Image (cartoon, rainbow, N blue to C red; front, top):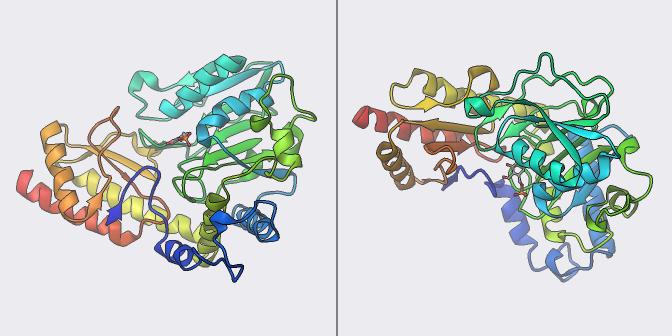
Amino acid sequence: VFNFSAGPAVLPEDVLREAADEMLDYKGCGMSVMEMSHRSGEFAQIIQTAEQDLRDLMGIPGNYRVLFMQGGGTAQFSAIPLNLLNGGVGDYIVSGSWSKKAAKEAARMGRARVIASSEDDGFNRIPDLENLHIDEDASYVYLCHNETITGTVYHELPETGDVPLVADISSSFLSEPIDVSRFGLLFGGVQKNIGPAGVAIVIVRDDLIPEKTPDGVPIILDYRTTADKGSLYNTPPCYTIYICGKVFKWLKAQGGIEAIGRRNHAKADALYGYLDKSDLFKTTVRKQDRSIMNVPFVTGDADLDAAFIEACRQAGIVNIKGHRSVGGMRASIYNAMPIEGVNALLDVMESFERSHG
Ligand SMILES: Cc1ncc(COP(=O)(O)O)c(C=O)c1O
């Protein structure tokens, strides 16, 4: 099938086949990666290679640490204020459900403020970034780079001066080039563009990691301990990290992030191009803020939406139903979705529009 799920999501078939080949015997060691100690030489090689390949792909500067953490993206909603607030305030730009959740959690952990929001417009756009009022004692400015549910992305970043910018890149991770040095911290759950659920990757500038574990911070959310222990303070999700590593190798073989970014834009352009001329299907997002990863669209009629989703299912197109808070459809077109999948979806859209338009 062509799997348009928003996450967990499609993975490259080559990676799955390679993992299947190695399932019972990883490189002659006689066991599966699932069975080996996280303290073994084999696993040390796996996690170190994964980190290096990610560094190469994203051009991560040397003064940033890469942390493999648990608890998904959601654990970072707590970890960020716990590690970074340091008596200051977290300034949040709320562009959708995920940044809203992060702001709410930060307010439970310490002081947090919403400095811009597009909620009044149903999160169909990125909030206005001109005239942002950043607090004098802001410890960071937070945004969700790509809102998975409503399908918006920042094509430009806000100016925050010396205040570090923190971004959730769960659903835009490695989708196109991004200048890491513009951020103090980037993080994302891997289960959309990188691997199976179970890991969040945090890319954080050295000087933002507290010198020692702040009081009251659970050790499992502590950046200092995680960094000092090379993400091996406790047992990590070894198998997930192993698959992430394979996806990084796959991305390199595809020509890296510039090449994959061009492919992603081509896929998104094909879909939006059709939506812009369709009389039946409509996008829900302001044009300049459209995500290249998650494309929500609607007919405006719940019965027609349901009929379309069924027509997709019959054509081998699955997980195209929109999030329950938006309705309609959502096509998540992550790195591993081939252009053939988008073309197959366009074929169903065209024939459905001919018969129902
Ligand atoms: C942008 C974004 N941030 C955070 C999350 C939460 O991640 P998790 O489910 O790994 O906690 C999601 C989940 O879909 C997401 O799309």
